[in-house]
Image (cartoon, rainbow, N blue to C red; front, side, top):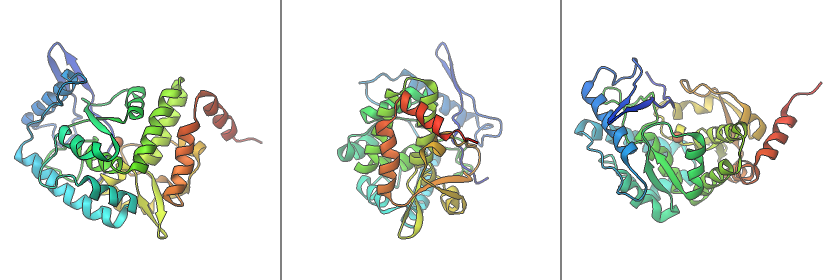
Length: 297
Ligand SMILES: [Fe+2]
């Protein structure tokens, strides 16, 4: 298995019992100790309220070893396949290489650079809430880590994705500004369709975006930066020019490598096109974009 999914396992609560419903092909499905810990981690996020200390997760040695292995591999890949803006942000935040950081440690490392702060999520956070909080420079993050039997694969976005993918990019003032603009866009849009459109532009930029640097495409999207396999493959995707109407309507399959990606000519080009869209979009602007993108004749 080499693909990296983006699908959160559903979480339910009955009374004090919190259950994370892993799919039957999840690497941790048959590991009861892992499942119990996943339930406890989800419960800690659900029980947390803003202003309280962030939940501390008792990771096992095996889990720390997963982080050690994957962090070393991804850091090396970033040197080759990420743009300067991301490499410098990674040096600035200097995430630990020898243990999984608690969210409080992520905040200590990240906030001094861009003011972004992490808060715990049990699993999927509703779109409006997830994106909207970016306007406050706040990032909802899961805390579980993938199963140690398959360290280079996860069917869900885990703490490696949230921290090595997102916190690294959030340590760049220019990338953090794009996240904040996306948050403001999500708050401005009132219709569900416009919000969905904004989330797709986010997906094809801050999650799976690439841009050219020195003639070669480089990955600045957190989904690529945290994927051991996909970061090596994105240059083989159909790299299309930045186009907001296409990005906002392009469908994607979260269980496979993305066959279509949108590539800026430079990071400034991404800031102009994607940042400009996030800065301007509202329900009326979205309607206009959709009308313009309907093929005529
Ligand atoms: Fe993400």
